[in-house]
Length: 322
Image (tube, rainbow, N blue to C red; front, top):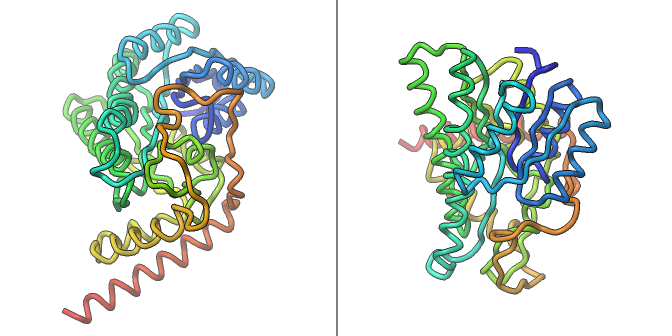
């Protein structure tokens, strides 16, 4: 499906992956409907999309509220006549020991990251079914394949998003809706403000775990899925870890746990406990990048190749030990 002249709804569009995706779609000539909680940031993104020649509509939305998401879909259809693409990209995260994080914060992450995607899918699919074609993209994570310590709520939702996508694909296939596609995107660490906005109860500052890469890489992958849908796509150096999880899951878990403790939480900078942006959007006009100096795609590919080779070697060692 070509991107030009399509109508795409993007949640989480005020910053990070969602914002990068909205801009990428607008540059390709799509009309974009932008959804997030922060009205000021959304209006800024809408202006940027229009400056690239695309049409844009900003609709302040809390994806945890199904009525708000249904209203978003109605606004999109009323303004542009249809919905061709729906990108679920809104996300929150929470760091902390499992027994110490506030239960209401845990529930809030689940409500946004998982139920927000459920609400998005329920709002989008009737439009796609009516047209007989379209693409639903759910942004998961490599954390949806290999879990992390201290981010239990986030990891639970990212695993569940992959399950939701798979179940929807099966249901659509059984009903004969072969031209409606449900795709999952699994990024690794990305250079967005996501980590600055995180709720944190670890006592240590959250930093982007290297290697970090640009959100534009994820946006390009999403645009490619609109053109040529695929079941699931891993973006960035996470490919190696995902491959390793299939052959040596225990080793993959140990690597991830050690890496999070050493590189995702600062050993030098403390942090006060707080709920971050769980209950209110970050102030200001938002941004795509978080200042973590994300690598470009070429560098990421080299890292991914090296990681994949490491996974193969580890798998070989494991088989030899049997």
